[in-house]
Image 1 (spheres, rainbow, N blue to C red):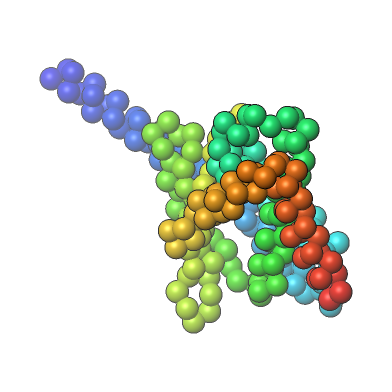
Image 2 (image 1 turned 90 degrees about the vertical axis):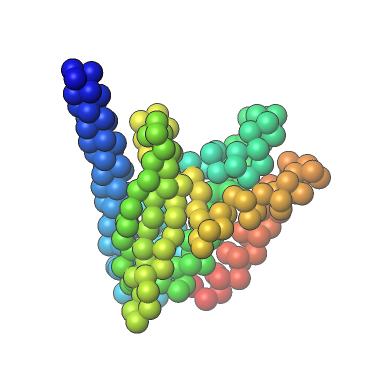
Length: 207
């Protein structure tokens, strides 16, 4: 009888702790998205939008919360990442950060003030990683769900991957990264830089 009471108490405490951790993660990213929404609301009201204004929004609200190294490990594999010289790791991280910025700016062209809300958080048993579901509310249509992989690194929660309609970015792009890396690390970095430079060169004309 005593053992049953103890086990029931333990399960209750564990479940409360688990719920509390997930609520904490949900609160953290809700605040992040709230800050992002505020800056985007001001941005879309500008008579003339420019990268010089949009890029700091990305840096302050997206990149500072993104596990860039973790994303690259998912894309090329831990062994290949560890084999890279530190200098090449830094170059690849910089190119990938610019790629993330490009993705955000491309999406920003379609943003018209749609509310973005955290819907749910699901963490693993150790509470070290999980998925954050975000809903983009669209008028006259069902809310559009986006899943973001979150990881706890050095007591800080970071974004690492994105999943839309069951398709993860890391899995979708892994083959492309592997093919470029087969040529050389310099080739992979150059390909990313070429895509980014082409985007910024083209869009600069309409800023």
